[in-house]
Image (cartoon, rainbow, N blue to C red; front, top):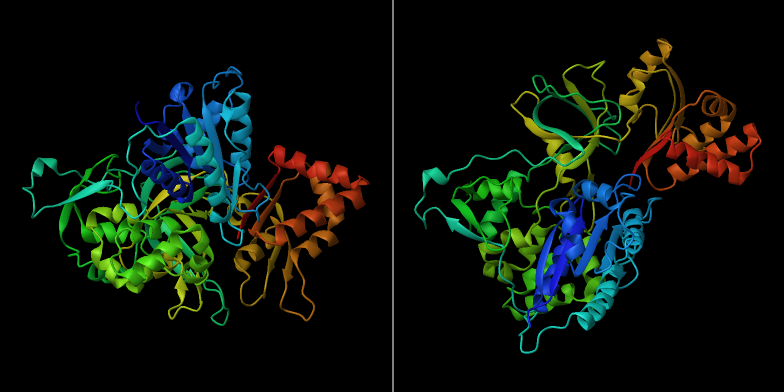
Length: 566
């Protein structure tokens, strides 16, 4: 009797769903199963009808959208022409990763779960709805969901008699073996240049851009350092419109790279090639590659490590105290301790290695790509228009910098890296262009508009104030401001929306206007929507339910869009 097979398909935007999928894969390997995990758009979806057991792990992006690496699958699986019983031989389960502070919480997982049942699949258990807002993070839902899944899966697909299982204390084989060039004879014919990064369906182009301006736009006394950064894209033939997003992949700091190499006793200038054991070599890694390039540009050593990091690290621990602590962090019972140690103070993976020196000394270089995820690109709304600024891309960037109980302040990897780029030096970024997100600065430039702008202080964080002033003088903009801290009684944008209910009703109901919200995802979007619907009722004489339906209809028609972040 052969070992049962498990296919894990994931849709991941930032790497979290991929990490969870790989974690499920490791659990399956230890149970003696044949496992394959891959992105949904890398999988030939036509083969799904012949699969026996599949776990889908997916996140939700934007306004209920699927991640970039499952968009093709999403379009295919929702074709109306698919027969109702086409997946009748499939046993499956769906695990969603989301954040309940967003209105479309786990929308993709819920919709996929329903669609799989419509196509005749046998769903082994209810859809898992992991929530970043849970006291224990996503694992507060994932752990019990996986326990239920394995109970069902192993009842249907038992491990063959006599097959030995792999203990959790024993490391699984690495995905890659490092071949250092002083250990093997280098064949120059095997040298390959760095390939272009893969482009997802929603990405239209990848290109380098030179930094030509990097200015702080908040007052020096303001707590938040916000930058207006401009890039020269001359010669790229790139075109973008209002709503497009640019993505950039940062680098680790030279100091972190040096410390990492010292901890693991690695020569940063040493060259190596990768020999894969059960997967392909990452497209972004040149072959051969230096240790410095790997650590600087690929391994996410400055991120707060996920639970899977401690799971693998524990298998190398020989020091009793370190092994006990790492095993506790990897257990379901130890998640409170792990959050207190790692997540709440935002301790980085590099800092964890320094806290466990005996285990770090035992690490094998072959496991580096299993231990550290790939640095993911970050998304930024484009804050410029080619009509006003030809051959330029501009972004407005808040530099992440805050304190926890850790000795050193916490810094955002990408925002700090971008803020450090010097226009007087040769500083370049590799961009990915993505569509379908709105940003006010880009949208407002070509049109006549009404803008409600809220911030703390007119003198400290009133972004793009000179641009708004010029547009007002040119008759292109009607501006309403809410500076919440400039007077004793705080004033917010939702109050300005309430005050201008008559104007907004005329623009939306009579002139087919569009309404956009951008800002913090906490209270503001809900408060603004409530104020808008109150205006529908007071000015249009509609009921509360009818006002709700009006906003839903606007969203369906693309006339209402919200870009928020937490």
